[in-house]
Length: 403
Image 1: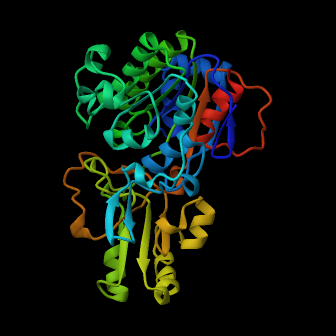
Image 2: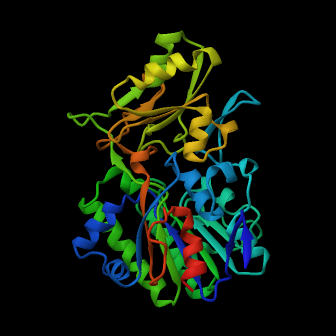
């Protein structure tokens, strides 16, 4: 038994794979299964274990991937967004550097015990975080051609996978992850394998859309390969995805910084959007979660004003948000704002370039994107039917119950 962040994990007796499908609203699987496009998943839903779990809020990529691999919420591992305001330096920064991590991962723990561990992620922004402290293989689709034995634990990735480096804005970026996972299972047979995709398809296409169904049909073919290899496989997601538009299909945005500047004057507040990352073409840095820094004597007044806006689901003070969403209080603002299902939050109109949005806006970040699938290719009898399952229970289920 290995103890990581207060939880115990049994050593894998057979290859164990955890897959995080970025942006996988449960309805994507349901629609593809109903269309007859996911026969492997259909069998797992019938003969394996099918749960609906909650991801962490903010329902963004970095906090949830790190929750899955640490088995803990952001209050433990420290990654509370893709982006934050560093109070000490007074600057807004990406949370890609492992220096922001406050907890070790399950992957690093088992690697330290001698297990063969591998990680493949779509975007390089996650690679260093997921592979921190881990001895083994860790590379991204985005920069697969740059993988070296010294830094990534493997070289010649393109030859192994048999695919070129995909465009970062493509379904192939995720397919490369699945293909690499299957090839690693066939050639290296890791004890633990973590695969994490990108939500490019989900940002553009709703459940049941032909392009979405093609993506999930492709995914199912790789699941079949992992299943045939004898692996225990757990599939979950970092967050769901919803349409964020008005009746005329234009983006449904509340620009918080513009509102605050009008209420309390420019320069007296700072709105941070933790969805922000280098890949904004498909979401325009607009999500359903924001945090605000402002003077203590303005908190109650501003909170009431924001809460009164149509489209706002909840406004919480720092302490209340940290408690409700299990967040590190020193890394969020004085207020946390979550918008409703069809609404996103921005800073100022002039700071968001929406010209590159090719289709009606789909995004995430709020409570409305918290429900995600948690499916295993093994039956797990005796699970507590009243337990609140989380996406970061994936390794517990796969290792402690699925072997």
